[in-house]
Amino acid sequence: MVMIAVFFGMLLGALDQTIVGTAMPRIVSELGGLNMLSWVFTAYMLGSTTSIPIYGKLSDIYGRKWFFIGGIVIFVTASALSGLSQSMVQLIIFRGLQGIGAGAMMANALAIIGDLFPPAERGKWAGVMGAVFGVASIVGPLVGGLITDNLSWRWNFYINVPLGILAVMVVAKVMPMIAGRKGRKIDWWGSAALVAGLVPLLLALVWGGSTYPWGSTRIIGLLAFSMAMLVAFIFAESRTKEPIIGLHLFKNRIFSVSVMIIFLTGVAMFGTIAYIPVFIQAVIGKSATNSGLLLFPMMISTVIASTIAGQVMSRTGKYKIMGIAGLAVSTLGMYLLSTMTIHTQNSEVVRDMILVGGGLGVTFPIFTIAVQNAFSHSELGVVTAATQFFRSIGGTVGVAIMGSLLNNNLKIELANLFAKHSQSLRLLPEQLTNNLKDPETLMRVGEMRDVIERMPVAAQKAVAVIMSDLRLALSDSITGIFFVAMFMMVAGVLLMFFLQEIALRTTHAERPVLQEAATELLAEQAQLMPEEEPAFD
Image (cartoon, rainbow, N blue to C red; front, side, top):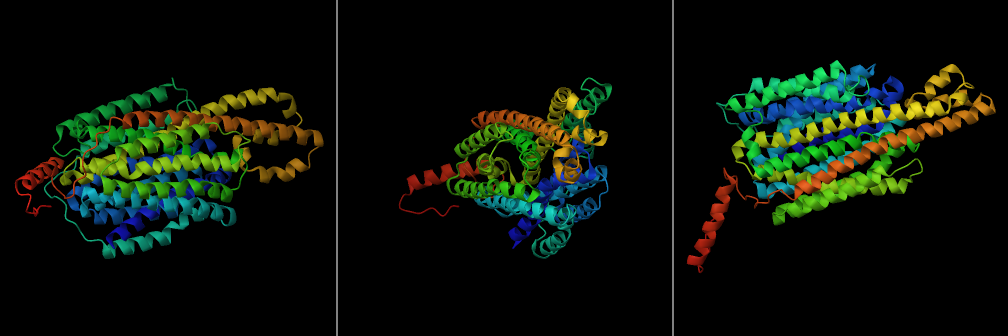
């Protein structure tokens, strides 16, 4: 019953991410601001990223139940406000608040599994947790597309309210209050320095090259301030007795290699998934519902791969080979995504996304369980939150970098395109000309159809040619970021070879070495007294 409650809470957060993805083109069409699209994802990730380590430490001290419930309440409130948004800026602010609520859910869900089960049994539950994300990802795009096409994109946020109320009722009723370890303190100075370092870094990555030149004083100032705050964070962590992210964690090779891979795959995964619906709808020309259907096979492969990998990990204790294979398959999928064009068929899109989803699904349960197994139970919340933190920061940086690359590529492509069609543009009304200079036009072609049909035949032909070239420019810009993501995945594959594989503990022993020592003792006892069956767990 406790696990059902945890899955229910996680389903809420996972469902929101996938529902919103397919609605983004319609949101941009109504609220405007394609150049701010990445911030709808970035704000959410920034809120969750900066709060996850703090929630992880708090839950180690005070227990996890009420932080989990509090996260759901914040998330639901922010969902309602997001649905009421009247501008892209409002939506971004409320998405950031949603992220703060999601941070509490993410930091505590996997740690609750760690409280209840030893490492050898966590794999199957972590695999199921990955399947919960997969189910949400299957249902989310389809439901999000249907809601967007038939009701309004706002209902993609309103739907969280009844689900959230039900989740709070279930969690409050069935989840026990597992006591934390009192007498420990929160590193508030380190937390403040971490937030102060991340926010300007993300601002610089999003604004650089699009809103402001990379060499401008604003961007350089943001980066300099960010670096200073991150150095202050490291200094604070090295001095405090109860760090948010202890520097000693990085001395463990399993932890350091895992978080590097998690970061890189986060950059690649979130940086590309955010723009796949845009490619499907704006470049290929499918509806929001159809884009949801095309994402369906990717999520099915993620569910199956995550569930199987978790079961295999629990039964065999092996995870290194699976991780290498999964990341390699995802790398191939990313490469194929980067080769898509305006002529790409639905079947090719489905094939590519199955490879990406299946490969990443294999890795979902691996790193969290491997890291939890490498540390004592007293640090469970901190190390679990750290893995979620680096996945979130990777996703945040990924969406920011990919958004910046997309905007820069589009600026160059559009300049060349309209220089080429300068004569044709003179035949068109000024308002239509201005619309055609905005790639958001591809997301609202239907709204302009009546205007275009009333124009002379020569002007209609000119519009058709320009729209075709505009679609080509957007296609090249989006697939370019998929190509960059592929190299992130290649780096992840190479790092996977350096991940140390140790036996999964079958108890909540304080340190992994205790289990290894127990295994040796058991073997010695069996040799000395082969006729007796030792009563040792």
